[in-house]
Structures are given as C-alpha cells and as structure tokens.
Image (cartoon, rainbow, N blue to C red; front, side, top):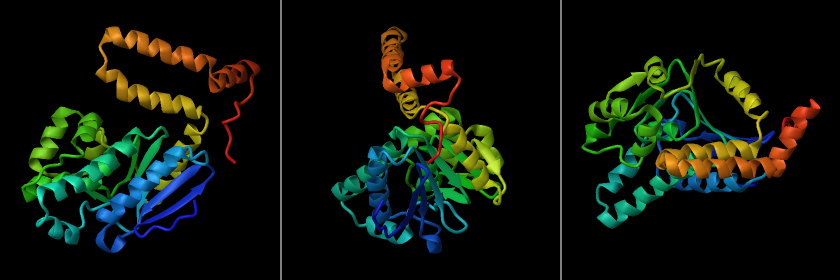
Length: 264
C-alpha cells in the first residue's frame, strides 16, 4: 500500500495488515485526522485482495487515550451541526471496523480510554498486556460513550456496560478478561508472538467462510427464529456450491491443504 499517513504506521506482509496508531507523545489520542485516516484505511483494506487479517496497536506505552484534548477544546465551540458531522465520522469508523469482512485483532499494549476503549471493542479479537487499562470515562466530563455503546454492549453485555458507563471506573487487564472485553492476557514481550499464533490459526480458515461468519454474527441476533431458518439455510447452501466451499470439501476428502492454508 503506497500511502503516507500523518497519524498511522501501516505495513502489509503475508496478507496481514499491521496498523500502529502513531502519536505516542499524546498516548495515541485521536483527532479528526486520525479518524479520517483510519476510516479511509479500513475501507481500502476491506477491498484489498492482499489483506486477509487486520491488526491494530499503539506506539509507545499506550494503545489510545481517547480524544485529543486540543481537538476537544475546539469541539466545545462547535455548533450542533458541526458536532453531528464529527460524531457521524467517528460512528462510521467504528461500524466500518466492526463490520469488516476480515478478522480484526486489537493488540492492546497499554491504556485504552474512552473512544480508545471503543476502538478495542469493535475488533473480533482483543489480546492485551498485563499493563492494559480500560475506562469509559466520558461521564466524568458530562458526556457519554454514545458512538461506541452498541459495540461495547455487544462485547460485554448490558450488565457490565451499565457498570462501566455509569461509573467511568478504570479496570485492569484481569478484569477486562473476566468480563469479556479481552480474549487473552500476555506479557509485553510475548504479546506479538501470541497474536502471531492466532494469525497462523486464522490463516488455516477459508477467507470467505470467515467473512460469512461475521455476517451471521451481525445479522442472526436481529432475526426471529422463523426468519433465521431460511436465512441460515440459504447461507450454507450457497457456501457449499461456492468455489471456496468446493475447494475446502475436496481438500478435506483428498487429505490435502486447501489453497488458502498457506502464507505467501
């Protein structure tokens, strides 16, 4: 990907996109530039045949401290229309990451606060260090975690979301694991290796099959059981006659690896 970013470092290798939030001097806090760059990047990755998995992390000691205070100082004087435009951009970013038809991994190397914790919640997998901290601290400022709320509620459930949103309390890595905010805790030295093991596992799966799994997870909870019968039956029927489904079944019965089960 031949593109220069102001707030991100991006590399793509062996079908994996590695994104680093790169504002370590302010703990990778986001502003309109970072939001715009992330949104553009994830849209491109969603269309890229050279990317099958996306990993995001932060430079320095933090993952993301939420909104840039200088940016927030300007937002204070915005009109409703200006605030709505900015908020819609942020909401679009979270939805784009959440609905990306490729596995996404947050590799959380430190604190993730406010919108930074929301950026964690929209990923499929969350691997964290022992030093990771999370907080939805918006209520401390008289605000709410509005744009990220749909994804946090889906990630940890309503009960834990009520506690996190209403108190604004900061939780540690172990608590994040207990409530389902994270999948695995690693030492700082082991974090990337553990993520790479997950990547190796995901690479053995059909790319289209994983995309459909994500679609199922998004759509099925919204369907009645009656509607889900036809919907899910059509999904599997289509996959069985698809090129990937045919290849996977033939490879299994021939006792060989399917074409996607390799890194280039």
